[in-house]
Structure formats: C-alpha cells, structure tokens
Length: 389
Image 1: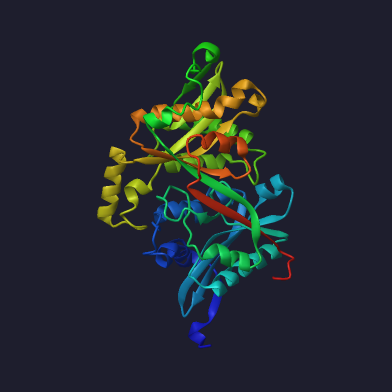
Image 2: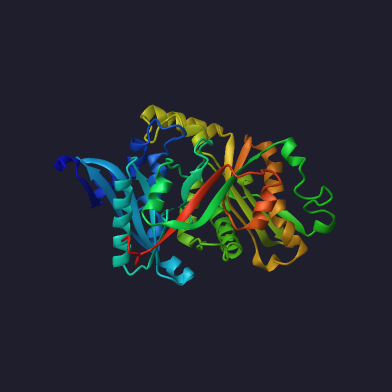
C-alpha cells in the first residue's frame, strides 16, 4: 500500500484538531440525501471540554481517522462516573462516530475507542452517545429522509452494519414520533373531554408556564421531576445541576413561557414537559458555519420565531403518582396541554424522542396520535474482553 494511503488513527490534541473533529461530519456527508448539517456552535456545546457540562463528571478522548493527511472519520471514547455509579458496572461509552463508506475506517475507529476504554478499566463499550444518554443517543437506523430535528443525530446507512461487523450487538432501540398539531389531532382525545385541568375531578390539578424571571428555579423543578420519573428507564442517567444550567443557558434565546408545561396538584409539582423549537427550521439553509450575513438572518428569524416544528425533549411524572388514577393520565394531560398551547405557537408538528422501545405505556399513549415511529436509533454493546479486540 502506498504510504500516503495508509490509515492512521490519531488522538485529538489541541484546539485546531478539536475544531476539525467538530466540523468533520458536514464535510463527510455534504450532499447526501437527507443530511442537513447542525450548527457548529451547537456541536461545540456538546463536545468542547470547556463548554460541555459532561466534563464536570466525565472524561473523554477524541480520535480522528486520517488517510493521506485527510480526515476520513472520527469517534469519541468517554467515561461517565455518574453512569458507573448508576449502572453498577464499568461500562464506558463511545460516540460521535462518523466516517466515510469504508468498513476498515469504522473498525479501526471502534478499536481505538475500545482500547482506550479498556485501558481505563472498563469491561463493556456502549454507544453511540454524545456524550452520554442525556445528549445525542444512538445510531440512526430508520428515518434518514425524515425532516431534521434539533439534537437528533443523522447517520449514513452504511454505519450500522459496519458497527455490527466490528463485534457490537444491539442493546436497545430508541424511537421518535412526529405528532401533527391542530384540530384533527385534538379530536383524537388523549383524555376524556370531561376531564379538564382545574375543573371537576381535576379541580386540584392546575398547570402553568415557565417563569422567564425564574428560569433557573423552574429548571430545577424540571430536573427533579425528570430524574425521578425516568430513574428506572433503560440506560437513563440523572441530569446534573450543571447540565440543566447549561441547557437553560443554551435554549434561553429560543424558549417561550408556553414551551414549559408544569402540572401541579394542590401546588405540588407532579408532572412536567418541555418542548423546544426546531432550530433546523430557521438554520438549515445557512450551513454549519454561517457567514456574517447568515448570522444576521438567523438572528432576525429568532426574533420573529419563524419555527414550524418543535421537539418534546423532557417529559416526566412524579414517582409518588405511580399506581394512582391521576398518575395514569398525567402524561396524556401534559401532551394535551402542549397541543392546546400550539394554537398560540406557530408549530404544525411536534416530535417526541427518544422513547425507549420497551417503554410500552408511553408508546401506547403516543401511538394513539402517531401510530408509527418516524425514526429509530440503536445503541450497541461490545464486551471489551471479546476475541475480536
């Protein structure tokens, strides 16, 4: 083989290589049907050690695959101390896996990540996560042609079989659903029309919006309910205070009070939902690194709230409501309230994801409005003692 064609995996070092790592997917996938690049600034919030809240409780090593001096793939290997504590196992993660259509490149990247994780004492590699399950989750298996959605990654079709060929097996699938907003959706009656918040049997149950002057306080209420509600879900990790603070700061420019649904019983929080506008609606034509004029356009679109879709990123019900009649309908009440508020917001569609495949109560609720998932993401495992290493 010509020396210039040799494949080399290098650990990312320094800001220049980190910038190259962040930009690489839009360079590899430019022009592929269905791919729309996210904004570089959004990816920096996920990956940059000085910006990502993950690094308050985890550590990571990034790798680039180089051939002839040109990057042809990337991967991260990371260890989350909170995950080890929660899962009770030395499970390390890989993520940010992107590569050209070449099985040798993908295999070499996965081997590099596994070698690093094994050296750190991990016994299983799981992923992809960027950088844990509170960030981007899974490898896209279905939905490549669906409209892009904020914080939902896109991967080419060639990657999943190459991951499996490298010795990884399916651990769990995560689903996303698209729900139309409008009169037809409301007619499906997620809850009986006789049940209205603040009235009759629900007289003690009320809802409110986010308090813009107390966003940090409402963020903590959201975090507490979410961590409580999803504590037993497969692979779930608690959101830390640092992660919630970062999330609020990042989303503050696009959030409206109506995006936050807090349901209270006698003033006590019992359920919560948070919907965020789809940044792709106003940025998909600007590329990952907009020009100065592009930034002006983006700012103007933000001010006018030129969104037509959104994503429910957090939905949770307090564990103290488990086994009660009210607890059984609280998720439906939260979704119904979001749909009601849709009349005052410009959205025509809301996406819900990620929904763990084995969470049948949530799936049955959502599938009354959206019978089939629009996207499927897969998480894989590989024992680090396997002979394929």
